[in-house]
Image (cartoon, rainbow, N blue to C red; front, side, top):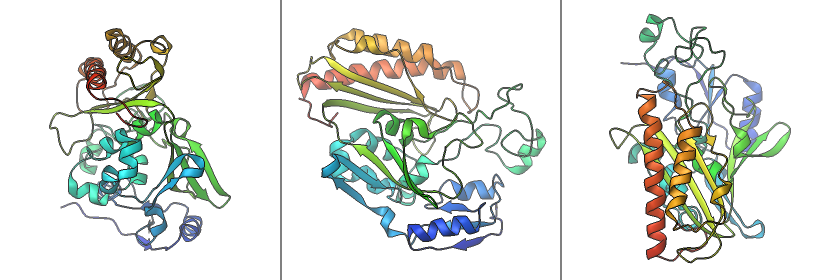
Length: 343
């Protein structure tokens, strides 16, 4: 049996009290659902002196339609189960609901939160093991060692971010709202993550994420989230792709006005695929759209051996899954008219 180490627990009731608790104990960790943090504590991947529970901070569990700003504010404490079924979110951002409902199992989704999934710790085949196993290989940059076993001469940790929601949030141009001693700040999700598995976000230790802000779509949109795992359930993704196509009209063959493709589980931050301008102006139903974008994903994304599956196979699957998904979206567009914010 893996036992939790000893630690203190604070139970603030407001965001301001959370910030004060973080200032009082700089090395404390924030506890929401605990589905990621508690297993890490049991494996001795972290040893914080205290946990700050958000269980009493009800203000973090609200979904607010901000009509004045044409946006939706989703509290960081909203459970993934609630997120996946919320009518406002499902109507405007169906791919986010799709990502949330594919996390782990119903029991875990009932406990896990949006904020927790955004801050999911990076994972690696060499570190997400028992302490006894890690000691057998001398540890690594992320735990008890000074070498990266994935990139032996590398100076940065390349553990992968396996969050389901993060690639979608980046694809939807979301923003992360933080509150700290200096007040509130909002950071675009694309700039929120860092290519360092040891500290993969720009959040500082005395800040707490309070909400995700998503702008409502102003155009007709098709979006989808892809996740590939071997066992089809429970597992973290072995690869993930978030896709967003903005269209000129609701017609099935409408020209593409904007496209964002974000790939996850490559490293510590999601990869925004570039050089897709050739798709702008093309008919969404044109088979060349799927050909061009899937090839761009394959050429720009090179998985590492940081998770337990062959990297070359994962790279090929990225191309295949992306191509199939775009073809399926085009077929769906031909059979059901699009509406703003719908797939």
